[in-house]
Length: 138
Image (cartoon, rainbow, N blue to C red; front, side):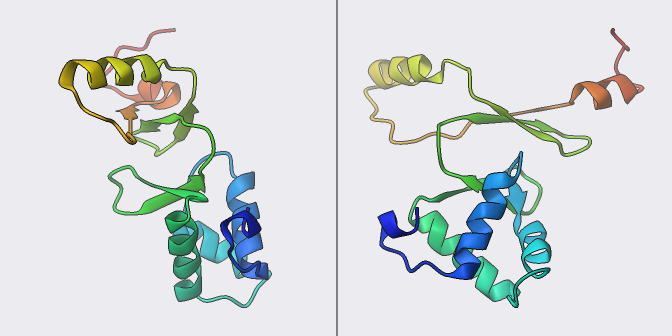
């Protein structure tokens, strides 16, 4: 990945990419810093510099879910996210037909869409069932 973007391959960059790739959901910088510091001598500034570089080169995707922090994931296939507003769980949604909607919007509005961002906010099933303001459905 790094060499295809003509970026220097460093131990820190490789470790950061591997850590994000192994994660089952987008991760924040604090998680990355804490995990990387277990095995590498690396400071916060270096981690943020690497995140910015990899994001600028399209290797990582920076996501903001209104939490006051950014999360990162490997920029691979186009997908969207479900975000639980109670526990913060994040789940990927990759089987929606957004391409058809994008084409329809482009045609109707005579607008050339270059990219989009789509997140769904609500409650995961566990939080929904715990919530006193929602009826408990099985």
